Length: 273
Image 1 (spheres, one colour):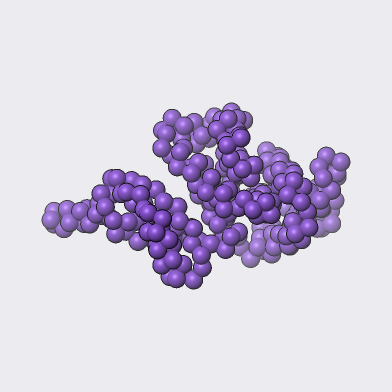
Image 2: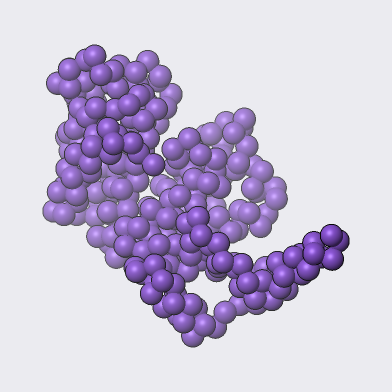
């Protein structure tokens, strides 16, 4: 969660991004998003630059001028101005500024996907990609290994997703490799799925069942959760025969576990006392 200072700093940049996204075409939004994320990667690799751009002792105009001097002529003017607005804000530290730059790039990618009518697809593709990775031990190890070169892991993601997923999905998966918000690969993917859902004004419900749900059962569960939470709910269903029967649902920090496996474990614990 962003603290008050960082929310205010990010909010101003996010408002400028929303204004830009409302009038720009999909290709231009996507190009700006890619450039913002490239600059975020630069900030990740250059701690001295991060510190200079987040230094509260420097006037906002000086910080904005510094980023303009670095980027002008190298990226689109709109990218320069969005990032100048971002660094002009009051940040709690260099790490918070990096998080803000990454988040601005993510929001730009999601805005482009929304304009293209692909936001729900991007959300689902990210989730399915995470399932594929977690179901393959060797692949999960290769992508999650922070000691391996990021370029090699990014190339692996490119091989897996290029031509098979939306451009925004690929861009977000690459960011997960870098460690979005300082998270690991799996946690990054999960957070990005949730941000994609939030862009559609939905919460994410992670549902585990022993057997696949029918379309009618999924719709019924989504309707009940939407009524409970007061907003639309995007179901992410995983089939795991190990739970034997029943359903487990996780929404945010809320967990509803009605599985047979849980009841058996409770019975075993009770009998052992």
